[in-house]
Amino acid sequence: MRKHNFGAGPGILPESALKKSAEAILDFNGSGMGVMEISHRSKDFEAVLAKTKSLVKELLNVPDTHEVLFVQGGASTQFAMVPMNLLKTKAAYLDQGAWSNKAIKEAKLMGEVVVVGSSKDKNYSYMPKGYSIPSDCDYFHITSNETIHGTQIKDFPASPIPVVCDMSSDIFSRPVDVSKFDLIYAGAQKNMGPSGVTLVIIKKDIVGKHGKTIPTMMDYKTHLENDSLYNTPPVFSILVCMYTLEWLKSIGGVPAMKKINDEKAALFYGEVDSNPMFVGTSAQEDRSPMNACFLLKDESMDEAFMNAAKAAGIVGIKGHRSVGGFRASMYNALPLESVKVLVNVMKEFALKTA
Ligand SMILES: Cc1ncc(COP(=O)(O)O)c(C=O)c1O
Image (cartoon, rainbow, N blue to C red; front, side, top):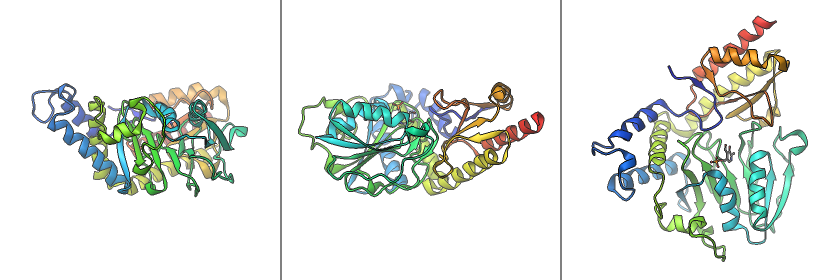
């Protein structure tokens, strides 16, 4: 029996993708070799890379102006790679929580950072709004979904300068207009596949304009010119991404996924709002459908609730230490059924302790 996995990342993956991946570890395409044992320059792997790339393009409607890259080092390396490639004098950042803070820290190593808005005053429980984006900055950096604080940008701001977006925790969960972004990046390990590969979708005409000497592997140009094959890519991670994206396509793609995600979120937040024992921690209008942060009003009952959840096969709901309480991550592959199980545990917990 698989667990009801509400972990924040690495997150749950579709069972069909895991089964195919398990087979490919031993014997890939009947080759008598596992996928981790074949050359990344073999025909078999080239086909995997090409298919994964075309699935990303198809599922997100990536326009011809943009290219899809697979790099390594996680989204955390993108915190540095973005300013290394794009920051000439100063860049604008939105301070939305733990992840944007890490991005800001790296950008400050490479130039001036203008923080245009912040929600630090309320422990990042809402998305900053009403800010203006200075037109004299090189780019504007945002995080579409704050994984730790459970908030999401619902409407992306119109920007006079290129927009760079960290979509690590909500990519493929809802349709986005890729043409509005000059660069999107995402660590794969929530909605796309396993850790080890990082997706970058970049507008081709911004690549290689930095005029600086930067390490080869940190230059987007290297990966663009070499079709993500400058060095050995994370072969297995990319294959699991391919199977995961095939699953996403088979259920109707991103619009169908959004409907399911909305249903899961409505069910879960509906319970948080109506159950007298619980309270949500993020502002209603900014609530993330991917990561729902919530508290028991009586903290002394945390352990009892955790035990009740565990008994029902639920894992991964402990909140991040900076927010406390609980966090239910409802990534794409988490079935609606799992949310129903969690909601029932919450209902029963309230009945028993009333
Ligand atoms: C929004 C966001 N950005 C960046 C990261 C860091 O990703 P990685 O571990 O791939 O460096 C995470 C990880 O959870 C995240 O949720």
